[in-house]
Length: 78
Length: 288
Image 1 (cartoon, helix red, strand yellow):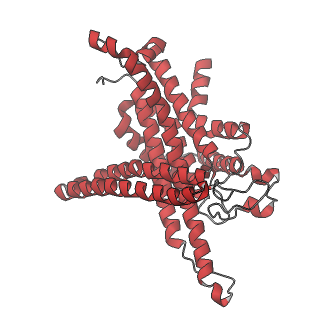
Image 2: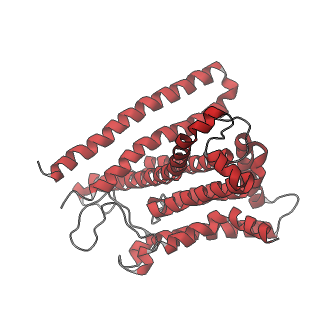
Image 3: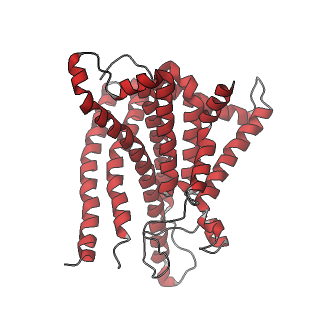
């Protein structure tokens, strides 16, 4: 197997696995935020802000995988 | 007196420092990942054409310096709006002054909830950083615009600026010995002193990882949303290509809105993390 086939197989797979991880993390984070809002609806604004910020940090890890994809993508194609 | 001038210059650093460093690092070159250089046309991720790309040749200076040009346009917009309002400020504000006051007060309340009473001192730096990154991100969403945040040079410049400012804050507020003590984990008893050779490399690596993560997060998110919009533009054109129509379906419209939300969130997260890094350098009560 030459390196191009390997890269073409591995790069999207890497991004997909990172997406699974971040989906699980985001599900937990947003789920907890929903519970907290249900418990105390007056604090919905603050909880929402904290949830958005936390989601952006969790999302960043998938973005690192995407960045690696972009960097290695140029190598495919000889 | 000179310290005050330097202090004010440092506070306004997000406006002038990124332009200078981007120019010094070779024009921030318009290198999209997978872009063709020289020989064959390797197809990288799809990108929409920008105004400079349509007006000038792709190897002319005006196109290769797209990123600094759009970044300086951002600075000019911010400076001119502030200048116009500042010249004719009144006690009972007009519409534009009112709008800017809402923005500044919103930022102030946001940072007060994080930094407490230190917020007033660092508000100029952090507020400018937020709006600079926000308008930079928005350039990519208007047609024929190109966002400078899609270049790792620009985002790394901003991250390094924040990193240097945080370290400078630590050194100037804690003193040089206090800053080294903070890096060593504030040893107070025998066990902490024995752990110092472990804590110093750990803290140094942690401090270096922060600008890296800031730069990569902003770069990856904004490039991703740009590529997403461009991909859906291509899809919209391909959807109507069977009837050879000159226009395509506007399939990218919902993704423009998603891009606006993501740009706002990324600017907010960058500024929030910068404020937390600066806050960590200031004297605070609890020790880790």
